[in-house]
Image (cartoon, rainbow, N blue to C red):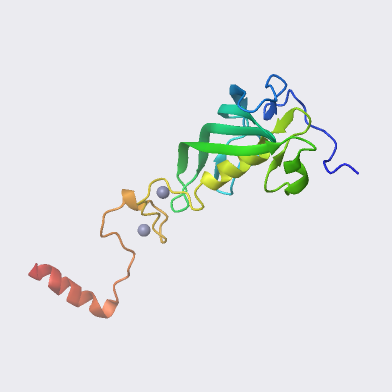
Length: 187
Ligand SMILES: [Zn+2]
Ligand SMILES: [Zn+2]
């Protein structure tokens, strides 16, 4: 029984790399530079690459004895929400990819697990799983509009940036009100 599931990759799919032009001779190289639309759900709950946004692939495919090594970078915009103040986050992310895809029926194919080393399907490589892993790993778990975002006032929901430093909703205990007036007149 064949170990690999039957080929279902579409060579025209934007995240499928076609190695037919790449000689199966160790050291042979081809570069892949293209802009592709981001697949859906490329991200985590609060932040991610919007579906259809431009992903810039800048990759090289290199033949090695047992397969093809794909390396390079992928960059694209990320959009999300600050975990503290809900302001929109508009940034970009660049991730590094380095992934070996074993030839079908190579020794590597026979001796490794598919989650250790990627697999080629015929001449095709499905880049999406590696790309997904790399992008998701690069995203912050707790995205912030800026590192020191002070967040919102829990009482009134106004951004602390827009409030005076001594902003407070503390009700002065009526028993102390007189005293507070007293201190104020002394100032
Ligand atoms: Zn914020
Ligand atoms: Zn407030």
